[in-house]
Length: 466
Image (cartoon, rainbow, N blue to C red; front, side, top):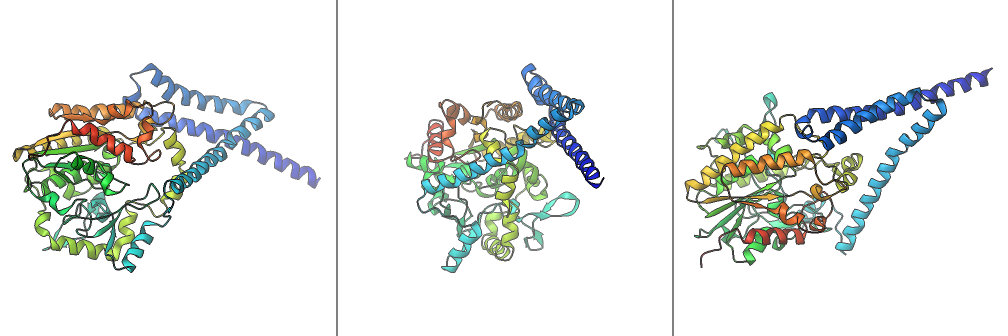
């Protein structure tokens, strides 16, 4: 009797487990369907897109729910198939991580597996004043009503540094097996001191980590290639910069320099969908849309440097964690990040974007307009460069309706302002294998990618006056 009861219990449990597996899969497809409904503005205009983004997940969800009426043996077979998918995905993700670290070792015989904090600690132990690469978001902390505030003050007033610790050794990133380490200039950017000398043909680059040259030696970034070609360059590119930080850098650091050309380098991977969202939560950064606003950061000079260093000396781990999660690799693995990037299924392709994206695009147009007004006020010209992301070239289906909508909207803003546009996507896509310009899916450009970007930009810029 006890054996029969036990067998009956196991049978009930088995049926519930099978039903739970099938229902969970149906729920995943239903969630994807609902998410795609939220992004109807991107999908509704094309029959193939409607079939792919609505028909496929909708029918899959309905079919899986209907399968609950199948015989017990068929339900079990289906559940076993569905249950094998997650282990297979994580096995593929594990393999890609293994290949990533193996390739790193092949690229760099002396592969450096230390964490950023370990590298900084080692440099400090040898007497070097080293700091992590930071940006405004590294400093900003949660404040009232969902805003972000700076804990740094001068004369009883908040101020927000934009770049790295001035004049210090900066530990940035490692995508190739070797850490990118550089000496920040007097304002925290990646330049030689002479870059800040005024000249009639000065060109300023403004952008994020792609403009700064992550994650390669400084002599391989876009600015270095342009300098080798005879251009007089000052590089304000900083990792994590979004549109408001880029506008702020123009207003704070280029007014006295008055460069002939300012190159706004827009990166499609995160400028709108990630960076601008957090920047809008900062009253200080939002204030740069006011044509008269400035923090006078250059005038703060030593006060800014000492305050930033003091803060990082005591809050370094917390500041790093605001932009680089301490368990970032584990989270990436759990989200099968490498597999998704290899298939071109990044955040944009999956439609995992904020509901206020259209509002952000409108604000971006305002930011670009204010940048143009600021640059033209001293007689300069603003040039717009479009930097493509690796996800655009990965996977069997390159075209993402959301990515194309974002691209069209951004380019429309630049065109409305009559800005010269240098579209690097056109140059990258002309290659038979655009993925070769990236270290790996989801990475920054490799040496070949930065060199191509600089070569395409060369013909559109004005050479330094002799």
